[in-house]
Image (tube, rainbow, N blue to C red; front, side):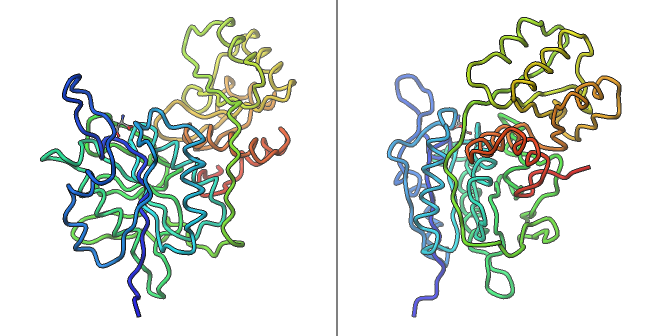
Length: 345
Ligand code: ASP
């Protein structure tokens, strides 16, 4: 009897599998075989590894909800056959994909570990080999009763395992490219892998895996800055078919108190646009009642995004509108934790 575990790698592209174009010298995505040839150590792992490759591997700056749908459907179609999944992905939009997948995969009870690298796998100092091997080991890790150790969407990068929907790309050139500023690491990798069981989502799912693939893209960021004009805000808020806005505010959730700003927001909310307040700060939460500048927004119905990352906030809006919820339901659900993406104050 073969009781080896089965892990599926889903290769979407990203620097990890890129090679240099000899003419332009720019890095471009390449196929999975090239990637595998550069990681001979993979054969030393004591589980079976198979792969699914995007027909055209991409730089993750080209990722869109169709690609998320493809990843989610591959997981759905192979869910019973494999014990864990490793998604190879570019770093640029990895935190968006991790957040989106966490919402799309309801009742997930197996590991979906997303990784990539800052240097291509073919380069001598690559971080790709270590990230890939560690991601595979984490996807295959079992707990004492034989179940999967990780049962959620997570990012493994440079020895840190982070909750996918709490992570953010914070460096374009450091090997430690991701941070989870508002949530503890799920695991640290050193000589061994130390799991933080208290932080991990390990409760029994409420039912079988459900994959939701409709993501509604009628959402937008409105990123405040001192001097932003009424014309700019008005223009953004009158985007055709707009349903949801992630308002990126100052500090603990503050914005201009001028009547022009307040009335534009009031008008948007009156037109059933859901406006969610998240902070521009890299860590911390919105506390809309702390300063007078935040109170006005909250009384008019701007939804506090608590400690959501902006990546989680925008993909959650896409997901909730994709489910067909009403604006009132979206407002309500944005404030609840669905997949461990926020801590209410
Ligand atoms: N531009 C690349 C991508 O996101 C960067 C990377 O993978 O690190 O696909």
